[in-house]
Length: 345
Image 1 (cartoon, rainbow, N blue to C red):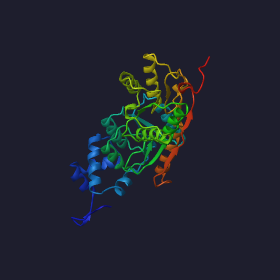
Image 2 (cartoon, helix red, strand yellow):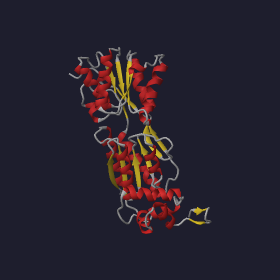
Image 3 (cartoon, one colour):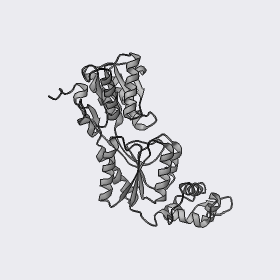
Image 4 (cartoon, rainbow, N blue to C red):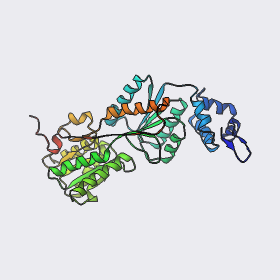
């Protein structure tokens, strides 16, 4: 139990109630998960327990009174074709371990992310698989304070000591850019993801690494910040075309931006890959249906989802106590959009 040095006594639930300005009964209900409470009220009580150092022992003990056999999964954009395979991997693995999955889609919004973190706590989930949607330190601090096992999925979070599952984004971006260079391209435009997210920053670094290794000077006029969306890929290429700045290839940080880029090129009468080669990242299912077939970097997305649950269950059961990071190796999938395969007859 925490100790109140100022008053020379142990901190009690009464102290928590006083600090949170609620009744003792309310604190008890929140910590034991017996009743549904508002997320704001739960957050107030959690903050009080943290300030009084009533956590982790007291709160963790209360949280473990009853297992819910449920796991929360927070993702930023269910419409992004990358995420269905990830969700499927999570669900299939959770089913094997007899856990239900509560799926929360934040739409990339800070407030939605916060609400879902609070919601999952109120539901007394046994653990959370979390893909960061925005760079918001308050939400991360809230998640970190709950005393619930968390596994970071696809994206690392700076300063958070939690297990994580991702792909070597920097290596994958290096491979994509290297492939274009080896096909004779030198004016390679780059559409990044959100730079404050680890996946966006790491892929930008990999792109620059490849240029440097071939003594090609980085040109900021060829670099655009995208948002991992079709629209941002289209807009980046349209801005590049309107600037009349010369380029002969595009590396987009995910497949859906690459497809947006190709659609824009098509609208302006520019042929892919004859005039401009394009490479994406992820290897979503659409990459093998779209014309031209999309050259891309494959992430083992389904397997990433499965491994995240493996780690999460190990933390829930106490089998694993310290953070572990699993980094999958990406694979270059050479298809038509980079000129790697002939057009199908």
